[in-house]
Amino acid sequence: MSPVAVDVGEIVRLRTERPEAVAEAAAHRKRRPLVGDTGRLMIVAADHPARGALGVGGDRLAMANRADLLERLCLALSRPGVDGVLATADILDDLLLLGALDGKVVMGSMNRGGLQGSVFEMDDRFTGHRAEDIERLNFDAGKLLLRIDYDDPGSLATLETTARAIDDMAARQLPLFVEPFISRRTPEGKVKNDLSAEAVTRSIAIASGLGGTSAYTWLKLPVTDNPDDMAEVMETSTLPAVLLGGEVGGDQDGAYEKWRGALQLPTVRGLVVGRSLLYPADGDVTAAVDTAVGLL
Image (cartoon, rainbow, N blue to C red; front, side, top):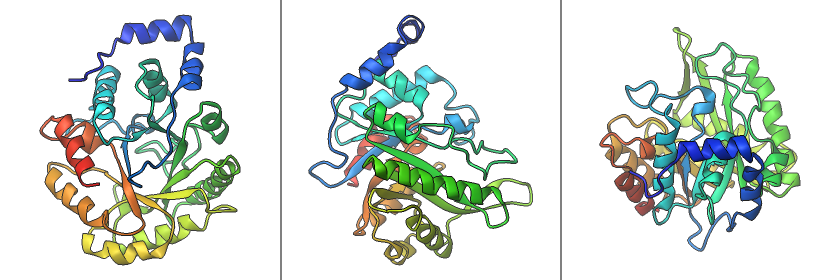
């Protein structure tokens, strides 16, 4: 499937015999500006596994096979118009060893401690990249998840650590993509994100005001339940924003149409999409990625 054949044995050999190869590859990686001449961003996301979120559609372990995931990522990154990748350290280290990140935007995922389905899911600890790691590895940006449940005290801890992460990244002049949601638990205990216009508006207002400066803050936002509400919702902030993909089920075309409309709004600068492009319902990663790029 991928133009880059992933040799797991070679990756393991390097990790075993020359672990310093990761740092060497990061130091020698060819970099680029965050936003190119088009002013748009197309990022492929693959930071889900570290939160224990491996499922796609009806397959609960779809993202569990690392060689398969890396091949899908290499294929996506090879397509024209794809600017870069968002992932945790283990995946980015693999991609560095594969030489797949030259000339790409590399975004480190910072908080993955709110494991999917756990009782502490809202207390989303920063278990991934730190600001100093992103700087040391010559990566280009960071991303964090901020879910706010008014009934869960764990959300307050996440709010505070998010603000400090924004400060730490801004001190290094590194962009940070904040993905906010108003969330709640269902009677069955499952965390559900509220995508109503009011909830998304509140999440934008809260996230935009965190930290000592917003100069390096971007927003990573969902399309509202009613896509027609997005124009008014996006008037909540002047921070640049990208749209996230989320679960699209079998309605890939419907997802494209929602993104197409929202991408016309002045603060929306691109897409950060993962599972719906890497694991499309019809299995055609190339077509899914190329269609998404075409929306920009």
